Length: 452
Image (tube, rainbow, N blue to C red):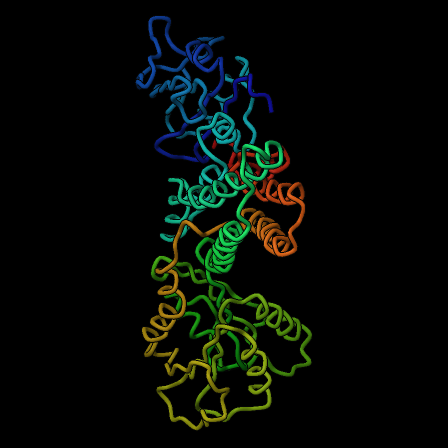
């Protein structure tokens, strides 16, 4: 990626719409844009010009619309930037983009506008990553986390760790180079500081599941014997018939997914094949997939027909369910006579009685979800929600801190102590972008769309 050239890309999704936007950024952005205007028209910084956009070669009219010029460094990328805001036509967008490239602009790489903003110091790396998270956010809480990071929430938390480490490192190196002028560190005080940092990082890493729930949704797998009412429950939660409901056992052979937003959080409900002994090869494959889904589930919803006694298959399902941290037993068909002995069910597992067919008890079931997941998310500090890359960096920092704390008890050489400190500081710098390599940046910005 060359920073000295001028790049261009369509910034809005291709399709029919009221407005389509094309971005142009780099040293030649304004001269190139002027070629598409009449000679008497001028682009002034931070002003929007309504104009006819014409081909510089044929002078044929491409469209009329608004042209905005942002002079660097007061722009998103820190460079001179021009935005063409025209009618949202695929033909218009592609025609203008082709003409801009013909005039010397280069097609932008994915995320290159934001990457240039990062290199220009307009954004730190946590803020740059939050841009793509905002674009991909699908619910209130995912949007809130991304917006919080864009406003510097995570950066402030990381700097709160990095700054004290930098101060300790400066004193250690100073005492090594100038022992007569700089005092050696107080190892007890430093150990206390490092221990507090370790606890903060551990607390942050404990929130990794919460972060996944917010950004990707809470995976809820519905299991049970055939005809227990799994598909009926799924349809009630979806608010529409998504799964086939039939009295014939084994109707659901694979699994059906539906995403529902509750309390600003996405719940992904998965209706699975009934778990039972079967010789049907297709149904058997479905049962195997259920067992794989259970391993990755955040919540297991075990649906039981309370009009029938427990079977050997039910007890086998119960053995699997009780291994999961979050689970609930749904006693279905509450509108019919109960013959089930609930005392035979696994202890300490929440039980809810409802009728999936009639919809009674569904609101209580949603209240259970709110209590189990949504209320817990309400108390989380959004600053501490990290993505996988950020968690990986913090894990490495935690390893360095553990080594430093353990080493202080055996009084290590100050040079070795300074080396480990420097590694921790550099890893925190990698998290915010103060230290980085091109491979890391390539991985981050490859997630972006071309026009951002």
